[in-house]
Length: 500
Image (tube, rainbow, N blue to C red; front, side, top):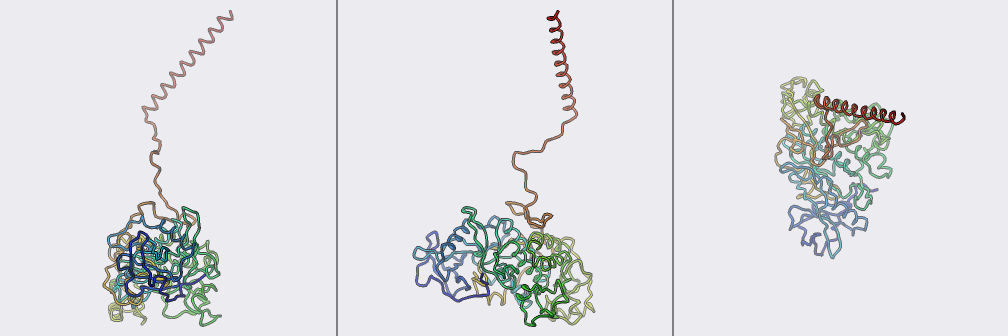
């Protein structure tokens, strides 16, 4: 197993060679690499402004080539309807890149990091303020969490495992749409050949305990990573395995706490946590219960972790009761709370996760003690966002700028919505079901299953008989019975006559 924390700066196999796409189109790399990682580097292509090219550092072996061939046949979320201007959901390989008659990489949709922000930047206050100009409030983050859950549930429903789901392998656009990166590490089975392709990479802070033990990625390990990301998004960046164990090393890392099963969310008396962390209760109760289920009994027993479909359902329901603070318009919070928690933090002299110091001072001045009245929207339906196809995270990030510039200054961003329209801070709209099959919903076991599948064409339910039809049927039955009786009587008379 390798982690995506490991990286190299290899220039790939393409130096000095003529490059072509699988269809024979000649291409060339432009400028510097957009990103580098453990497997290769990602480049903009001069002849195809819509694509980026991932060039491997080492020649792909037969297994990698079979994986790429299977991915070119698959593209699991290609059938999703996208809103106008929405990026693709996945950075999925679309063509091979060849040099000297051999494959050395692949082309994929280009991620523009001047527009889309890495998820790890969305989890940082200063990046949110620069990139989204105050619009990345709690309701926006709730929408991003629902979008992640939707995409994960859809991939699981279609037989794919993300494997390395983390804050480094996703980007978010100004409207809250999410794009998953590094799709060439997904685990799946080729429907044509039956060959299984696993995932050998992970990110320490999001890897379930069994992944750290060297086990293969599964839906359950994805569910663990999703639970971590949801918790981070709804607490503006706090990690559920932050802190140090009271009876352990003060230098314990998040990985150490995951492996040891030490989470302040489950056993707060065992963990020394930084004062900056937000209280878990800012999350809606149903969401908090799922988090404690994932990091409590689900930590050691993967089958007991809430599925991505259950997360989606809880997040969708939470979005229906989001409250807008009357004092600070940038403050949004769950309807289970009686007062604005962000204003309360400011009133207690703590930092505001969503506005700068001046806005926080204003909130404190208007509502002493941080207590605020609130306006509650009549509707805030949610659906998780279908997100775009863009590849490479820490391993190799396709983009029009470096990861550093991606978390730097950005253009203003309109309020987010959900799929297929972004999540609006004022009036979000429901997302229609995917065109091919219903969205996965949890059954009684919490497993994602498509509900409400249509009946096969040509089959209709039987209709009840009318009174007239019933009367006619009785008359026919009586007539038939009379005929039968007459025939039998005639036979009896005939037999008696013959016997005499």
